Amino acid sequence: MLLQVICVIVMSTIALSGIPSCFQRDLAQGLQQQMFFWGQDVLRPTGNFLKEQGFQRSPSKGLQGTSCYRLAWQSGHIELYGACAGWHGPEGGFTFIRPRRHCYLWQSGEETPLPGAWQKGLLKSATKTELHAASLPFLDWVIEYEEAVLARFGHAYRRENFHKYRKVPKAKQWVEPSAALQWFKCLRHSPSNLQRPKHYGPKNHL
Image (cartoon, rainbow, N blue to C red; front, side, top):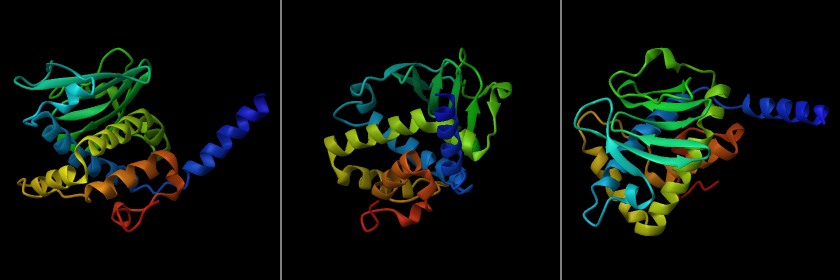
């Protein structure tokens, strides 16, 4: 049994060693764009889609006048703010801080990030292997949620969001939404095959 466990760990390490280091930068840029999309889902005239998907909204404990959206997920919680997003479990987790455009390991099972305060001692920059492992619950949610958006509103809705994002001052355009979803899926399920985001999309299905 021990030998089997060791073999699984070794094989996983070999597979993850092939992840390009630039995935950390690509992931940060992708989440920057996704956070704009989720904000559009909140503002829908027909209703807040995050709340429809089970998120609980509460006032932010960090920046005044903002909100926190929280959802129980995989033995932890997804938390979405205007300034950060991530998954936090009983032993820590993963967080993306939008103003810094950077992804971190989160090192607390009791506290979660407070926008503006950030609890610097609980943020840790990580190796690509560590960051990928920590991001998996969050990636699972991103993929499931975006597929729910497509099932409910169709591809035209996210394309409209994408065009709006391109007009936001200082916004850094990433890739169009169908390519983004394909990239997130590859990062989650076959990271050793990951390419730069521009290689994904309608003409380059995995």
